[in-house]
Length: 434
Ligand code: EPZ
Image (cartoon, rainbow, N blue to C red; front, top):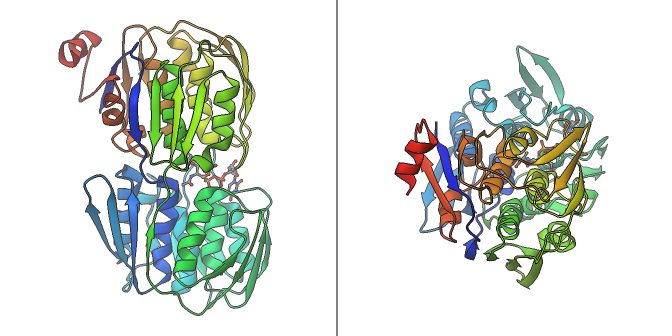
């Protein structure tokens, strides 16, 4: 199982280029199920979840090419022959976003059999709102043996109001609505940029959609969609993660190839915490060391609020800020798995329900720590970059799900980070890493 060996203390200086957004690429790949034509997606990140989605689509009969570019990947997806509209548990259990195929499969073939995604480290992750919306559109849905079985001759347009704001719920039902008979009005939708990306692709494929990016989306169903060639937007969470890396290490980092318009809440918060942030243009942001980091509270909200996917990374920064920072997690019920590992490195953090109280600055010392989920992993790496000594961050396969060439990008701006196979002791790691 791969580990990172990280020696803390180096300020990060230079430029990091951001990859395409995993959470845009996943729904956009699923959207290819809606047409018999080929769909080409550019700027695909080379991460494990994309490979999982490729295997999932291929298991249904799609032809999915992944063409590795110099820096960016391109995928071509041809779902002309869908021999087996089933999303098997073996694949779904490794990536719950597989549930994104439910809506498009049902819309295209009239049936879908999708394993019910289990929960994950951060919460139960139910998909009841996806199911409720599809039933409102006329689908007959049963659940047995751990699978959802959905059938509909043709989905019909409906008025859908989400009980809770759900990103993949909005995406799943948007993909169901574009081929439905009649108009669909969706209210209380997610406004994330990833929803906007998906809608832009669907419109390029011939769908009629208005309002993506707002809480009210209108769809006029069409009889069929055609292929398209589309470029995935940069990953705003990767960009935010590296902005925090620049701030926490006291460096001077340019995050390039990003979409600065998607980083409003993160930039504002880093500013409040004392980091020097300059938006250099629509695709570049510069972060420089603050004289002193100041405590600042966060409360995770749906977009455009402070992203839950940035909560763990921000908490690492808060351990270095002067004062008391309150970190409130409002989206997921168990997204503090990184806290105990940060405390083992010397952080002063107390959790009470959905609020963590972080007292800083705390001197962090290197330790052997364990990743538990994608963003908690990033938090531990950020802490290790400032901890005194050499940390071992274990189970980095969690990171490989959503961060492309993470250690290479960090090394490129001065971090001392190596990926190791089965390293048994820090001494052995030190011998190899130097
Ligand atoms: C998406 O997950 C992202 N994943 C997550 O990113 C992200 O954390 C999350 O949105 C919130 O922004 C992808 O886009 C692939 P939700 P999603 O449905 O859609 C509850 C990462 O790190 N809910 O918006 O699954 C749910 O339990 C990942 O890249 C229901 O109750 O999240 C949660 O409390 C982690 N019923 C809240 O809504 C449902 O049917 C928001 O979840 C659906 C959701």
